[in-house]
Image (cartoon, rainbow, N blue to C red; front, side, top):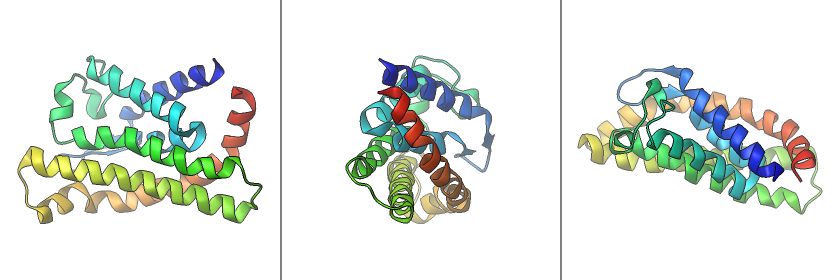
Length: 180
């Protein structure tokens, strides 16, 4: 029961993340991708994925929770649709990698490395789904797809990764202690 509540709270955080968006062409720089990754890092594959799924459902039914205050199923058909689907995949992948920490009493360096690897894999999965769909939605060449859908976001996403790794390292034990 508590994990469901934490998932709903995280879904609300991801929804609120649309307010932090910087437009740079067809795909804005957003905080939501980092929050989706963080959901997987903190809540695991099931409940992290559930929080992102709740966010996607809220946006799909028309609530203005996607970047720029957009909502509705049509957003999934637009240039950002693949990135949105990638959020769900990212949360599940991050959560699965984080399961490695559940059964081990590793030192702080190894735990930090596992969290960083999980976050990197999460951001990478968002790029994979996002770039494939962006190319299709805008009928771009692969070179243009990378220029518009990847290159402007690498540095901001690396900065987000550097921020969320210590956050996850510190908050994860607290969430696990109180959500069981």
